[in-house]
Image (cartoon, rainbow, N blue to C red; front, side):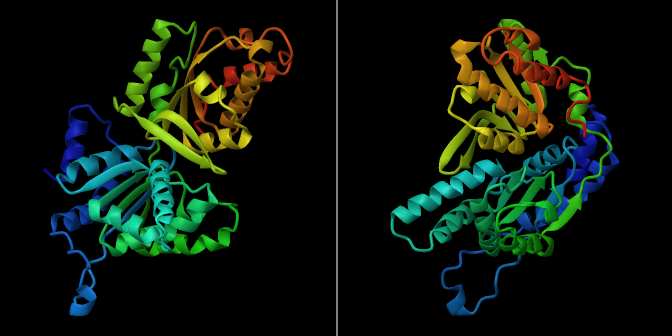
Length: 359
């Protein structure tokens, strides 16, 4: 069964809704599947001494478009269809954190060009790398990713990535962005860039009109939150999303396909600031926040962080799904900060709207 036949079968069985833009994008994966079906290029070794030709450049794909258009679903279908080829499907942020950890370990061993062994290890393990939600928000990633991709492609690794941004908007307004521009040109030259222009936001459609704020935060609320998580992630258990901020690590305990999940205390009980919450908002399109407690002078610092988190999510138009001990207006009713919390309560109400985040 071809990839497009697999897609049509899912439509016929009702697992997917017919979407012309999605079906049209299926053909973009065919050259990559054909490449992966060939024998893997041999390790470099003595290639240069023996005068062998360079390995065939791998076909690569950059699939971008609006949130909820089905990019991740198409990539998952393609990865599953690639069979037993050594492959890895990973969130881009999580992968880059692994690269940084590898670089640190290589430098500890005194290796001057630390990226070389790290990239070569990745290339030795996989022939296909599928990245979800590619975006560049950190200058260390911006300075690293171009050389990393170049080395992986030179080793014959096919790269497929999804993104909400056209390549020209990657790392937009970032520090020293001029140094990042060659990587954008490399994407355009070495990868097929395709916009998935679907008229339907399927993620928003799943949530449209659905309850997204559950109170009280008991067993029933937990069951409803679990149901929504399964629906948005396809029953994926999720993996920790680790973000680096000025030498510190911010962790969202569970994440998959731009959906993150954490408890109130995991995000607001930690000494995080506005920049940290902004990084979380940039990395996710949906945040599921469990067990918001009553807020008062007894947990004033946590309450302030919660206000900052909601502001970051609101400004980034991130969909919030939450369970709480009470309705927004009754979370913070007395003590210092209760007056200021009225704006947060109002935003929590607005964020429950059926079309929130549709922009």
